[in-house]
Each structure stands twice: as structure tokens, then as C-alpha cells.
Image (cartoon, rainbow, N blue to C red; front, side, top):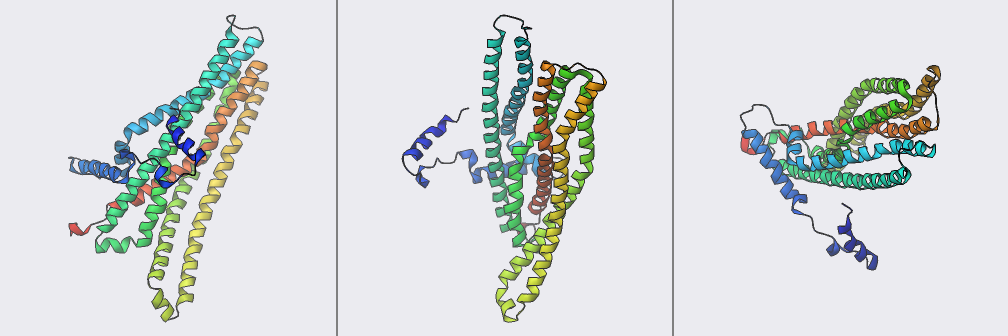
Length: 370
């Protein structure tokens, strides 16, 4: 839980510079060969099942690592719950300072409770981060191994569709993005949980004025819906343009002697520069929409606070130290999930495109099928 197993390595590094032989060996579950064997076992079981549907690579990977996903999800939920106790304990502290405590030593009990909650929050966050990053490396290693094994068995027809540059792109870009996805996977549902908890605390603090906060958040999400579709489209086009450019560059490097012999360097340079312009166009479009998306969500916390306080003024809801400080503390709970929504959307879109591309490659015909 507290990563004390790293202490001997830290002590050794403090005394002497670390060398390769000092590094801890990988466990059996972290080795690429074992991960690849587990993937192929699950894939063969799915193919032999009576169902006629094509097995989904995403759900096969989930079935391979469901225990790790559940455990990391537990720590993620624990982190969200302990983080949400802050505004509640703060409100109780203010009530105690105003002489509204329920028992004699309530202040000491609240201080101890806050300490325990923050310790649990820190430990659960570190465990969530470590376990999801480790899971991401395992997924990336099994995909890299699967791509390597597959390219050795590709048929001649499949090799014309998947050039060496594209295959390298699958390993360096697509497998990497899927490896990053486990870190963001739990953010897709904990964001909603954290928002619901924050809205419940806001309702307890400012009453019906919470509805204005909810309306602003809903409008922000609705405005984001078309942006997500555009981002998915631009990401797909960007990866296609990148594949075409890498294919042209790899072919130019392979046949460099012929290009030099016939003095075709200038022509092929213009071709590759044109492909770079196309790739740059889609990359610019994706990043511009992502910037607009980020601006929309980063501005939403300020809009939430303005809308809530204006509603409190119009409805004549009394504001005292207790509910104002609780509202400000709860607003920090709203800020984090709302501001991470653009990153979550971008990562999910990139992972979806990467899963589609790698799935098509792994389903390509092989030599033994002919």
C-alpha cells in the first residue's frame, strides 16, 4: 500500500549509482510473452465459441485484466469518496467554531477524521495511479507483441495494405495510446460520481440555487457533444494521413539508390512535403477543436459560481460563513472533474481510433489461410 518495497532500491541508489543489475526483475504477469499468451488464449476461446460475432479486442483485453481493473476502480472510488469529505468536515468545523457543536470534543474528533480521510485519499490516489500505469504497460506490451507476431504471418495481399511504416505506426502510436487509456478509463465514470456528490453537497449548502449550477454544467456538456464528434473525425483523418506519409517515407528510404540514380529527390521531397501539409491540416483542426473544448470546460467553474450566487441573491437565500465556505470548497470538487472532461474525451477518442486500426490489422489474412 505504501510502496515500502522500494526502500531497499532507494537506499542502494543513495549509497551508489544504480546499474542495470540492481534493477528489480519483472514479475511473471508483467512480461510481454506471458501477456501475449494470455491474450491469444482468450482470443482463441472467443473464436471457438458458438457466437458468430467477431470478438472485440477491447473486451478481450478487459477480460484478461478484469481483476486489475476492478481493484484499481476500487481505489479510484475510495479516492473520490475521501476527497468529497473535505467540504462536509469544513462545514462541521465552522459549526463547532460558532458554538453549534453536538458534543464536547467534536473539534478533536473532526480533526482526527480529517487526518484519516486525507491519509486514505493520498494512499488510494497513489495506488490508483500505480496500478493503472502498470496495467497500461501490460496492455501496451501485449499489443506490441501481437503486432510483431502478426506482421511475420501477413499474406502478400495484406502486406500491400499494411506497409512497414503503418505497422511501425501501430506499435509506436496506437499501442502507446491504448496503453495510456487505462489511466483515464476510471475517469469516465468517476467524473460523474464526483459531480453528483458535489451537487448533493451544494444542495445542502445553498438549497435550490444548486439548480442553476446543474443547468450550467448540463449546458456545457451539451455544447461539447458536437465537438466530440468532430474530434473523432479529425483524429481518424489524422491517423490515415500519418499512415500515408510514413508509407511514402519508408518507400523512399528503401529505394534511395534508385532516387539518387535518376535524380528524383526533388520530386519525392515535394510529394512528402505535400503529405505533411495534409497531416498538418488535420492535426491543426483536431487541436483547434480541442482548445475550444478546453476553454469551454475551464470557463464553466466560474460560470457555475456566478450563476449560483446570482440565484441566491434573486431567491433571497441567506449566505453565512457556513454555506459560503462549504460552497467554495465544493466548487473545487466540481472544478477537477469538469476540467478533466476535455482530456478524457480526447483520450477516449484516440483510444477508440487506435483500437479500430489495430483490430483491422490483427484480422488481416495470414499466409496459412491461403
